[in-house]
Image (cartoon, rainbow, N blue to C red):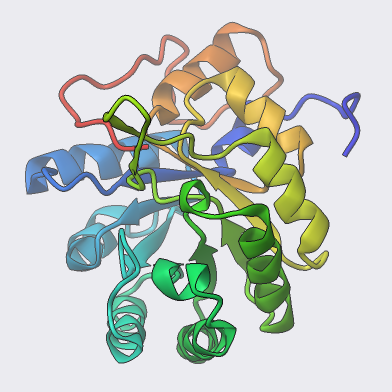
Length: 263
């Protein structure tokens, strides 16, 4: 993608965002506040826990904002049958997209038959329900060779999106602390290079500013996961990016206080 491509509109950027509502401490009141924000900003989706799908369907009805539910989240260790059931129920209840975490241990152990069979099963049930599947790799745990093979598998299975991270894949650092890098430029380039042209890229983990979003867009990213949605779009308005502007988004948009951070 060219560094000189035209600037997107604020509305275009909003339609790149899955507003993340996945923090483990999120209450129903905070969920409703986050869903209202996703509606106000005209996001692509609100990304929610499976148990939040029914409430999200009611709150986002007739908004044009889709519902993305996670499966096997955040560590990917559920039995394949449970991931399939989780995806199936979420889609049956109204989720239009499913973000499933790979079995990271199976990836690291190069059990590619298991990984392929599991992703095929989840993708099949999503297809049967009319939902798109995004496959979360959790790149912080992986080597480039694992990421490349996952991109190849997802391309072979016609998965809709490959995704960098959960935002919760904390890795023990040399000083004993736990942290993560999330969506890095080098990994995004690697994923774009080794995924088929029909497979889209979702960047999650660390995309927190307008400049972050514009940068990953140039790298070929079609969607991001973010909690800083209102701040990103407010900055886009303040910096004079072209319209249209989502009708519910005020020109003085600022982050909503009180909601726990996620990505």
